[in-house]
Length: 116
Length: 118
Image 1 (cartoon, chains in turn yellow, cyan):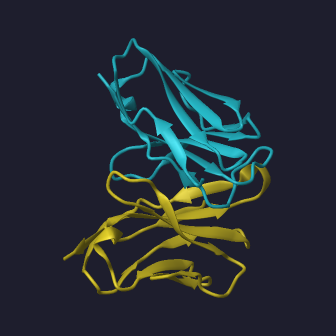
Image 2 (cartoon, rainbow over the protein chains, first blue to last red; image 1 turned 30 degrees about the vertical axis):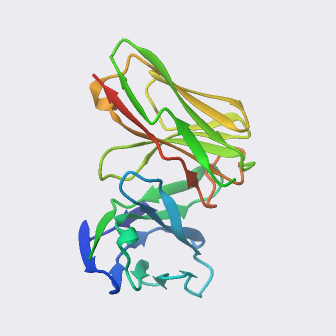
């Protein structure tokens, strides 16, 4: 079975500091995709980072970077220089399977509060 | 235009009402999705349309009826809903529409319709 686990339901960080959100997953597929989506309060869900499993290099997007450990099936998100606008629910998701068996499996989310 | 729009933003309906939710995108995306999201939970996939054809129905009750009139529009018709159907309904789209499957490209989400069933 394919699973995504986010072990931190809630986190908080001071503005300008760095925070890391954890995500572990399980799949038997060799090729798959991993995503971090951000959902600010009362605002749209947006993609933060997308990683293809066959790419060794960790994806980065400005202040957001991932630590992708394929053997450990870990996909953590690091937010540097946290800003108040980073306050949001963060969902990790796994895209796995081929053909009619493609699935997007979501973690339960981490609620991040950035404090001034 | 990288926006997915949804109307209405809020909807309150009784269990005997019929209403519709509307979603629109003008990015040329060929896959469109309906999700249901409860508070502080991840979105749950309901339906996927690929090239304007229904490709995935995640065993959704028939009181929810999707419709894709054209490549830019997606509707969700609601009838005889239950209070437990109260949730945020999200529409999303992605670039490629596979014949019967889910895209692993970025999904662009709308702001959602907050539905309350009394």
